[in-house]
Length: 123
Image (tube, rainbow, N blue to C red; front, top):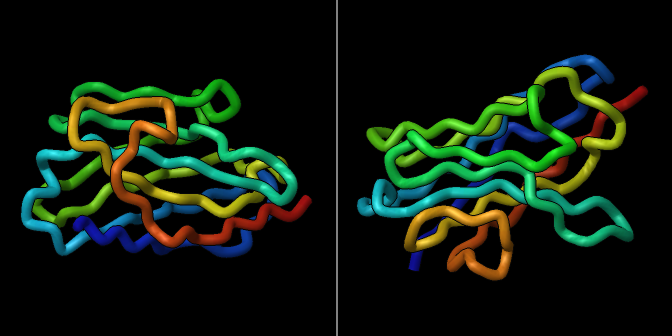
């Protein structure tokens, strides 16, 4: 069982930045592809970004391309989501997730999920 813990959420102004972190004590973290998803009230869960096991392959949702950057530090068992040029539409609960092979833009493919961290962007 892989336990994921997100942090770094909070309130930011439009145009501002936040960096989310997702850490695990799992010693085999480097074996997993990692993803970030988000869910706003009344909306379905949305793919944000994903990164493969080696950090060389990444993918982004259309709404965040050019603004968000996913990265990982396997020595720290942590994946990050740097969010720049924030918009009110980015307001959501952000979840990190781990997949045992490759990486995916589909939530159903992920094996483990964190509890989520709230991001609020004020206009």
